[in-house]
Image (tube, rainbow, N blue to C red; front, side):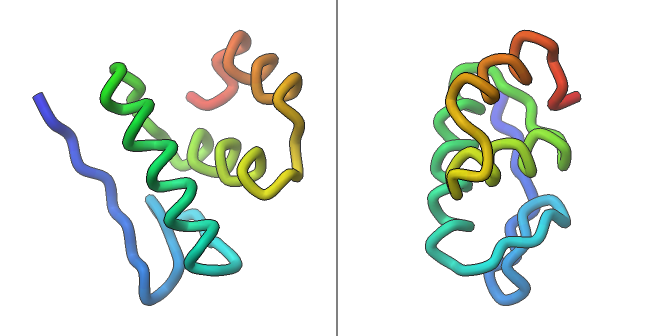
Length: 73
């Protein structure tokens, strides 16, 4: 089954999570889509974590810790 998520390009948000620019929003949307294909169910908190990884605010090591802790729920 395919689930959709709310992406608002004019307001630069995904599931209500704000982005600084369209390029980052699209990169994050692509990452989310790939993960959703594998069964990931995004939450606003998870969107924020992936956004922070895409923008370099958190490292891959930190992203892995968040994933292991299921901090995205």
